[in-house]
Picture: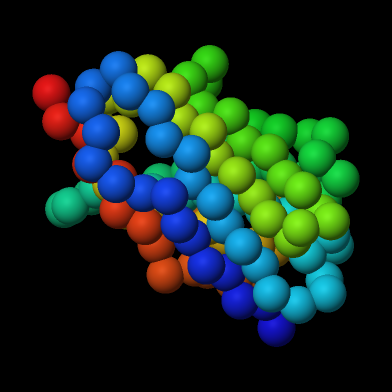
Length: 121
C-alpha cells in the first residue's frame, strides 16, 4: 500500500512558478514509477509528466514541455513537479500517482488527494 500526499499548490499570476511536492509513505517508493496528472473543471483528467523508478526515463505532455520539470528523491520518498511560466490554462487540481511500471496512461495504482493550482491572468 502506498499513500501519497501532495502539497505546494496555490494561486499565482501568469508567468510565475510553483513547485508541487508529493510525499509517499511506505518502503516501496523506489520501486514505483511516478506521475503527475491534472484535472480542470469540466474536463477529463490529463497526463502531465511521468518519471521512472530510477529517474532516468522522463516524459512530458506537449502542453507543459520545457515549462514543467519532474524529479524525484528516493531517499526522501518524494516526487516534485517544478512548474514555470505558468499560464491560466494550467489551472487545475494536480494529482500525484504511483504505479509499478513507467507509463503515461491514467491506469496508476495509487493516487493522492490532489492540490489546487490556480493561475490568474
